[in-house]
Image (cartoon, rainbow, N blue to C red; front, top):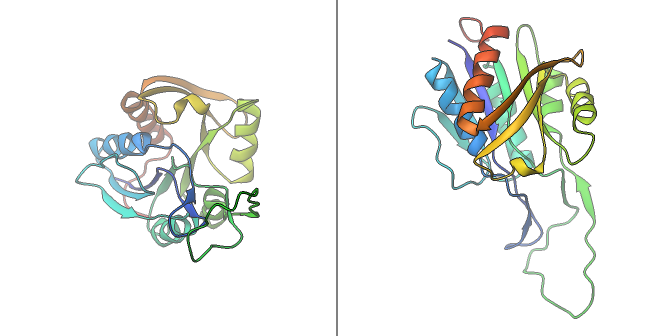
Length: 213
């Protein structure tokens, strides 16, 4: 049995007390991966942004809102885990300043200055040790394979699942699973539950080791 950390869902970066930047990630893939991991006999920790999607009762779920909160929760958990599956879609940017009151219409354009949020997978990749492994996800709109491989290498991942924007909030999808050398490990398609089971089987074959890190 391995202890596996899964990130899931979106994050939110607030502009003011009621508005935020986010995306349409549903958490379906994260939930499917949690169920597949439990079915394979693993201990599962899910760090999840705000979603309506339920997670399996046997999974330990840590709810977060912002990208920084997701990173903090992952850092706390990853040290005791054998591996990470980074299926979340955290915001890449946040407002430089947070308005303390609701931003109201003035009849004029509103300019927002955005700054980058922390890169969760890169941060965890830099602290990976020993036999720990990381499987990332890369959602790209163009040149999917090249961009996914660049992310894999820059973030110290062991595998990366590449897909396109049609995967967002979808019941089924298609992903290319790529290795650091650039080879295609597998092309997975179908329901997210089916893909999660296939991906977990590949993870078990390549990485799973008895005991916790």
